[in-house]
Image (cartoon, rainbow, N blue to C red; front, top):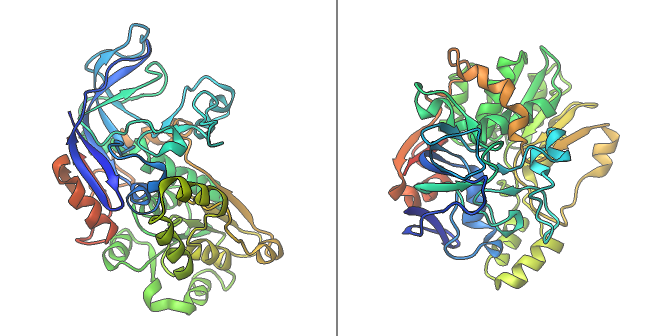
Length: 394
């Protein structure tokens, strides 16, 4: 089959690789019909190469048609249409039953002391082959895939794999009072969808912050306040307070993560790490790695006293400094973590069946054949051609 594979920093290729096969009796094989390119994939493209091997298959936002089932699979049959959550979770262990599928005890990666395995996402998270491919082996066939109805296009459902539950959790964790206010840092796929979900759930003032003109215009088109970080500069806090009764928003969602603009020293350190041998780079990142924290520190500055910072952007530094004096003095709440996909499916799925209140049908800016994935990664990283969400057709 064809699959998008990692070969080095900024080097991904569409290769021919062996087809996946049933290994465990509850496995299913899914023929992928649509698969997404995620902002988190760019961390693999740029920073996290120490935890990848050449030939690793990337991607964790797939959906498709069940092609084959193992002998113990009773919940699905060939021909069923399914979305695959990016968490590899059993849905039967203690953590899964708490709605914490990202901490699944069955698939935790004990070698690295990390949470549940993820499709297509490094040795730190199980090194499970990903979904930017023609076929995908999916474990826990009775409990992991999300069965969706026939009829609507893939665009209606594919975001259940990651974008929708990640953004939903970001808003849920933000604890915004009805009629309250939220500022969203970063208007990529997760930030954009977080704005939409916040408005749908009754948030009164939604402020989107970015520096890419097309992303700001897209948010303005849905009626949100927008602020251009490149023009606001040091006046951003005052500009946000002007929109929130002078005190700041009730919550800030950081949808940017470890590769934020405006953190030159950390960016240089990340760049240096990518030039080291993998064993040394991995050890450094696990013990002394730092992130570009401009987005997170901005969130802490922006949020009102007693407010909440919700972090959905991925961070990976083990030695990141935080402004604890400010956080303590402002009496902030901080919530974060990988989205627990299945925890939010029952909340989200009805919004995909009747109408399209979140605008998922035209959420993608680019739909491309998988053969064009290497160029799409470069385009998305450089924020060219108005790229916000890219979907591939294998």
